[in-house]
Image 1 (tube, rainbow, N blue to C red):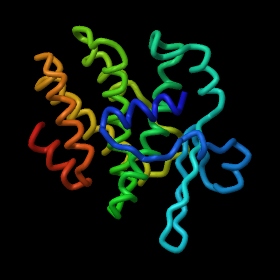
Image 2 (tube, helix red, strand yellow):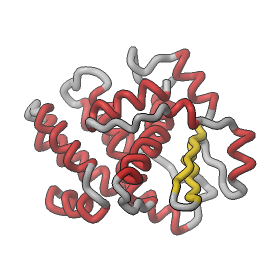
Image 3 (tube, rainbow, N blue to C red):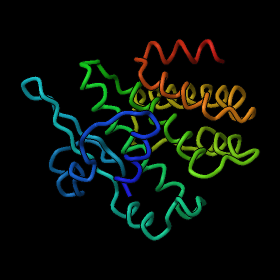
Length: 210
């Protein structure tokens, strides 16, 4: 499942990490040995050693098993949407971190979360043929119906709030500019341009679009 999400994101953005996400997935026991702080259901672990970045990805195995039973390419609903978003977020973090590292571009946690929020919106939108009103429903679900984990500190809550708010504004602009007009190829070109921007460029794009 994670490999399928990776292929989809790399095809969407026309990038090639040359790596297989499944080879970097660790189980809960291995994750708990590496991380002593909060332990969410999805976590990208990055450790830089002598100029090299080492990555590991943890995604709750129960989420993957649920997606294997309820394939999101057949239907998305209350039974699998949350787990699908979890998988997309993890793979988005993995692919984006590698792409930034390959060009020696510094990466902040805010940028990582912002791109993941955009990836979740676009992946849900493009999973099937975008129907009338689908974008609005997806935006409402992603950006309006969410709760913060209770163990997040103030700084983490502010970062997630900033990522969510900016991704929502960008998604709303994509909807009005491209989705409603059925200009999907033009939207894909814009998404690829946005993907290659740093945080400052992404925020500037959103500020102009909003």
